[in-house]
Image (cartoon, rainbow, N blue to C red; front, side, top):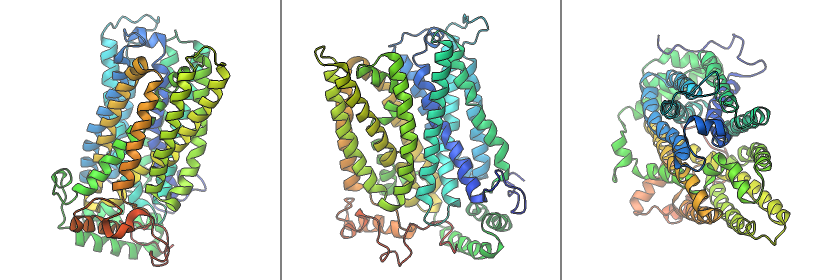
Length: 528
């Protein structure tokens, strides 16, 4: 059997004192951490002198950015392949294959230009192997980023979807923090001239896919996928594994009813990508969410953090330590994200996040300019500039990190949810490819004026979100579909004009029939 059910409730769990639901969140969070680890890993590898020599590159060569950014092209392709495989063979097999692909790409990166005596004889082969490793690893991580939100969403309980995904993305930041800490530690211990100062952080990443592949067999496949493949008994076993026999029967009937209603509603990519298609409007909301997240500029800040602190006047070593402190603050502030996302809503966090980021980048432009004036004391620029960058990081984490990944799981019907997540990852990959490719060029040519560019792009991101992105939190799938149906009837995508502006805010408890919070579109109302 290609997709057996997980072991049942009587078996010991993966982690003591954890319920099956908590195990799913822990697994999904660790998988999401792979993306964050790559960001932290590459931020100091880019400045390692042995790495640059091995790749035969100058420090300011645009190829440095290309090596970072081709990873995102791999992510875009991987998301499509993984989503197709997830619908055909199941969420779990797709996740396992993506983890194995990630592991292979990581090994190729590790072996690029390797030499036991420290003097590479690979020539141009080293950069070729590194590029191949980046692309292959991107295929795996992109697939994970497409399938894991779907897997997690299909297994989440009512009112916890936003919180669960935000917690998973807090682990994304933990991955970033872990990678950067290891990177900084080995750099301090071995120096920037040692090849193992950049290879050790790469090989440590292997722990993630190897651990997850060893544990995935213990987790359930989603009952929704089993039902879609007419595997009713397997769906029942998975539901009993998660909820117990008492609730499993009623949930199984709800899933079967939903499947029967949707069995004739087949959605393809043409329905999502062509104007006039049934899912074109929600797809544009998904696309612009990822484009706007890239336009906030914070993907570039995550990868090139040390260089930004250097623009504020800090020396190389102090800039590296401040970047570490910024990542620690980032991780802590993600707690605010999962505490607020189901209370304030997605739209409000994104709009105010864009306003805050635009303000911060404007101030950073000012302080970056002051850093070039010799008569101004260094501390007068460095201290407030660092504080503003810490604040900007926190604002992005709370307002923009998890929200744009959550929305596609709430605005599509279940027959299009996997494709919607794939579209989300494709646009994320292409947008971040462009941003990470252009950022080092921008730093080299615009210096601190690049901050002003990010201030302007944040203004656009905030305006578009306020104008056209509906509030999807606190509503069932059917309620969110009302927005798109009304928009089609009223021939307007402007949120304030559709349905009298009903979707500008989260619904009140009264509007939500006294239930409050969001409801799971796949498993129906929880009776817990």
